[in-house]
Image (cartoon, rainbow, N blue to C red):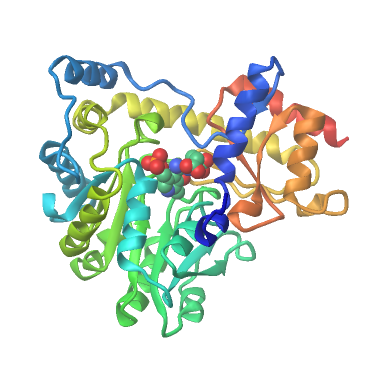
Amino acid sequence: MKISKMVSDIPASPTLSITAKVGALKAQGQDVIGFSAGEPDFDTPEHIKEAAIKALRQGKTKYTPAGGTIELKEAICSRTRNDYKLDVGPDNVIISCGAKHSLFNLCLTIFEPGDEVICICPYWVSYPPIIKIAGATPVIIDTTTTDFRLYADQVKEAITKRTKGIIINSPSNPTGMMYGKDELEKIAEICLENDITIISDDIYQKLVFDGASFFSIAALSPEVAEKTFIIHGVSKTYAMTGWRIGYCIGNPEAIKAMTRLQSQSTSNPTSIAQEASMAALTSDQSLAEAMRKTFEGRRNIMVSKLKEIPGLDIIEPDGTFYCFPSIKGLMDRFDGANTFANFLLDNALVAVVPGEGFGSKEHIRVSFATSEDNIIKGLERIKQALT
Ligand code: PMP
Ligand code: GLU
């Protein structure tokens, strides 16, 4: 069968394929420890599931408006007004089948062939493929040499007359790094000067540690907010990855165009999942906070144990549930992260995501969205396999 050139060029999402591989090995009875998951290991809180069951019983099983229900849009606006101090209404919102889908719709709507879009490396695996599907070209800023810090000068240097957008993801998947307000201010100024659209992927907003407060570039000023699209969703905060609800907030004209695109592809996101997401956003947030606290405790264990493994070098993540240690000290034994990840799976029965998909062959991503016992056992196995 002839596969189109565009689709032939798309790699499968490595995070999803490795996690699927771990599932298959476990199903065969192998005692694999998975550090590859990009999702909370907790179950969705009971009251959110109850809201979905109630919706089912009430017959909320029909199509909804293509861009999502007005009720969920209102709930998203109210949350955004509260968290970002931004004056947004339902016309600023589209609800999609996950944040990935919102980002996909957005890139197809605002970028086209000839455009360049800046991505910060290490980047989330799906950014470059989505930009390419839109026909645009990803331009990469490397922060592996600046301890994952992003400086405005790097952005300045990456800009050409073709630059149309930049994707900021803070805290970042895979590094866990949060960018400071001062640097974001400078970056926003550069974007305004050069008419560059900012995409702020804030999906890990609620997963920040050490009492730090989250800050989004979108919240800097009304002028910056006008040039910014926020990508967000319920997957990570509420352990709802399988429900597939994400959203985008931004310029109403673009949101309308994205809704048109969505109406010709998936139609609305699942009606029942939208009801559940409303419960997630509008109810007591203490369960989400409890999950965040647990992640923080696990982060502390993982970082201290990673530091004990010779050859690995770790920058402590500010948020998310990922560490992204450097394996530079092991490059005399392994020619890259792919080889190292295969070695770990074969010799330690531990699954990690090699850095290549995030733009670095000298790093691996280890997720602490797993139990403390697994973290301790898995890292001990890695240590043993390397000695
Ligand atoms: N952005 C980032 C940085 C992510 O890590 C993820 C994880 N899946 C997403 C977007 C998409 O999340 P979802 O589609 O599950 O809402
Ligand atoms: N975003 C998560 C990850 O990075 C989930 C998998 C995916 O959507 O790529 O692992």
